[in-house]
Amino acid sequence: MHHGARQSMNKKLIKIGQLAKEVGSTVSEIKFYTQKGLLKPSGHTPGKHRLYDHEKSLKVIEKIKELQKEAQKFQLKNIKKLLK
View (tube, helix red, strand yellow):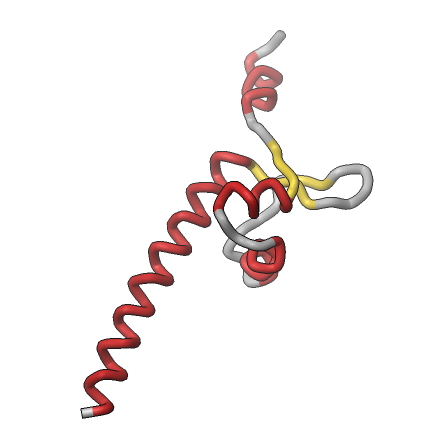
């Protein structure tokens, strides 16, 4: 087995439903991230289901959620100032 084949075998691809379940999200939310270009499928099944790189997708979604929380805090601070 050559090096390139071994690398591709280490890459775990999962379907969108499994990814959503693992990150505590919905399929709709994962599709939204994909449509906005934040998350990219690594391939498709013969039935045209999206397949995502497991490790890479988990990291990206974790970062998205972290940034969303920070943005929400920032927005609430600004709203509080506007209400005064």
